[in-house]
Length: 244
Image (cartoon, rainbow, N blue to C red; front, side):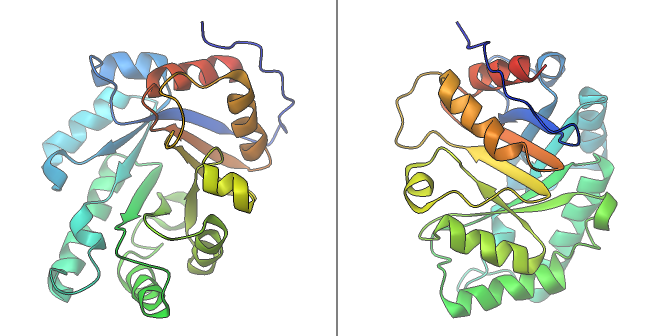
């Protein structure tokens, strides 16, 4: 049975939105959105869709929210294989247009493991987010939140500090072993928890875990909790019901 005894006082200004990374097996978008308020989705084939496809996503979501994962090609910032400046610009513009069309609450940029915390790679990230994937391009303050999730050797506190410098929101897994060992970065005014379940048993999260997620997110004015766990649908449903 999903835990239903979470009892945490949440600041009245806080807004926590819960969902899954990708549709769970056997669920279509219409059925999913009857149960949960947020879906983080990858682009089919990692390609920008036709406007008609994006319009269908928006219609399926209705009043619910979508978060969009950026194509991997955009984040291959190291040569060889990096996009030319012209292609990088045009594909980022197309992503921003799609995000606006579906009224994406967030756009999630996941950098590959070979983009390490070196000074050269930090400069690549600064150039990309300051000059190409800018806040203005994604709608500014009232548009899509730009979320950055580094893969590889980034320590959570280091990634969070760079994200703040660049005006991004770092995706944090408050339950990850390395995060717990080093200390969880505090949630900012906008927070994005992306719970992967790495290194944990493949079973639904317990009440203590869900309470910890809420405690981390509660100080934020606006927080997203996205489950990418093996039992992501059960976990999201349990937390959504508890918050309700």
